[in-house]
Amino acid sequence: MKRFAVFGNPIQHSLSPSIHQQFAEQTGISISYQKILAPTDGFAAAAADFIQQGGSGFNITVPFKLDAFQLAHQHSAYAKIAGAVNTIKIQGADIIGENTDGTGLVSDLMENLELELNAKTILILGAGGATRGILLPLLEQNPKRLMVANRNASKALELSEDFSKYGKTCGFGLEKIKNEPVDIIINATSASLDNQMPAIADGCAAGAVCYDLMYGKQTPFMNWAKAHGARVISDGLGMLVGQAAASFEFWTGKKPDAQAVIQNLKP
Ligand code: ATR
Image 1 (tube, rainbow, N blue to C red):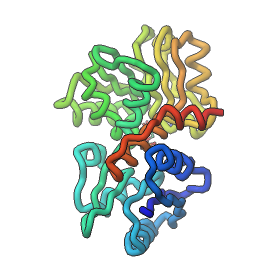
Image 2 (image 1 turned 135 degrees about the vertical axis):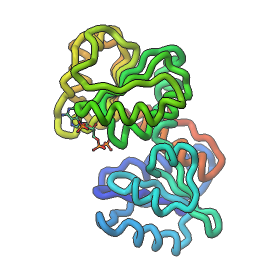
Image 3 (image 1 turned 90 degrees about the vertical axis):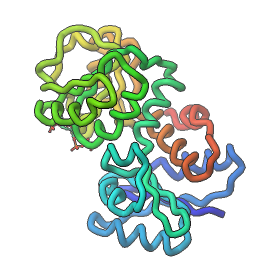
């Protein structure tokens, strides 16, 4: 039986063990998958222990994705550009780092919500680690324009410049968002954690797909989207399952059915 785990702090409420067990049943692979609470300054030691005990791979969540990047000997293109790792595969003596967050988002948007991203206008709110992790997979779908808007405008500008070689992207302050509709708005700020809504023009939501990367509660962003005429409103549950599916495939070579698991987890 292959051993997997997820490291985080906190980790108690992680859905990953349940998601991966469902993937294992679907694909007929026998796995164990545990939650590991590492001290905030003790990720490397906890990960080394798990590897020593024969672990085949693990996921990494807040606040250890940068530590996991440091731990990996090799990095995929997505991990490199994100500067963060959410999935590690142990291959002999090698520790291989991958980042499946963006893949998870794109698969949820395209396969589950059945959206086309090609030639669409996408507005991302926030310019932190979450945004950095999703930009390349989104740009690979060839949107018409990908705008990054942030409270601190210079962070948005810097981030969009880092990614400009991959597609049409630009960055500016939240106050520069026009009062006119866009196709897709992705809330990648941490405002939902504080029960807040980024201050933006209401008119951009009309007819839009509004997607919050957070899951597990109706966020102020989702309420705002509803109040201002969004066409589709989603939390990030499908992205969570999508990133897990991409990790599972990275480890086992088998592609699980994410949609079935999303349906099982929906309240
Ligand atoms: P993460 O890894 O989740 O992206 P982060 O790197 O700390 O976390 O970034 C948090 C993002 O949410 C930032 O873009 C932050 O904006 P600033 O760079 O201007 O601080 C954004 N953010 C947090 N709270 C916000 C709020 N109430 N309104 C708007 N943006 C907010």
